[in-house]
Length: 185
Length: 189
Image 1: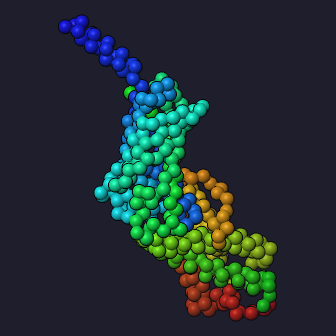
Image 2 (image 1 turned 90 degrees about the vertical axis):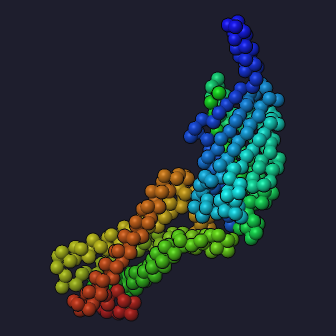
Image 3 (image 1 turned 90 degrees about the horizontal axis):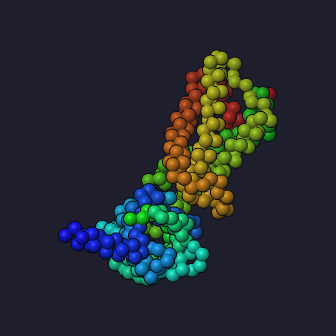
């Protein structure tokens, strides 16, 4: 019985060893910011509550996988009007769609420390393919950090309904900037 | 009416500074409190609200320029003496009040400007984009917001005291403290 337990442990250990590394977000070291032009002036804000499951190893990109969930109830913005509006029915409609998510597993090395991951972004009731470009700024045994950018068109997701579809007031192009530090699991 | 001040009367430039800034400051305080509470639920409401913010910022920068020019003008002009009917204490407190008014007229535009910049908002002067001299910083924004809000109330208090002092001089003391700042007064030496 003892041998059996030892063998199972060894097999499990080797399996974990072989799989690409798992990471978890380090608390308070993550920023997901957005920026959008309102009447020509940039307005920025932040999604402050995110969680993520990350499997990433530059040597094993085919196994890499990322799932990020964003709690849309927690948004700050340089104009508090914007932060409040975003939760309303015409925008994220957080009552019906409280979370946004991005699930990516198609990773590509772009050279140097640069990568891209194509995945499915879900906002409200729309899921579309989007690309996150990112740079690995630190990769150590137990700590890794990236900065990334994604550009999306809010109208593709129905974010800004009715009169808010007018792009001369709030631009369609939204810039997302993410900075994440993760620790090995 | 003389362009420059004399030791007993205000010239046309000093009076123009006084009354133009009075009109702008009253407008700024009214619009400042009004725009803050406006809704922005529709594009029209937001355009109106943000448009007022832009106007408030432009006029705030104008106030800053005017108060600097006014201080400069004050430096190269004699300040008309206080009426002889004022006691030493009264003259000192009047002088202190005027200094406080200048301090607040400088604090308000500066704190407003700093609040906008540290809040991540570019500031335009009637459409002309100005460089962002401060970085975005949420804690600084909160600090400048508090200064700006308390400053507005302080300015209102000072303004009311200033006004009552002028009315007191005119109706109770019956001296020329109020009338010598009136636009049409053309008292000569």
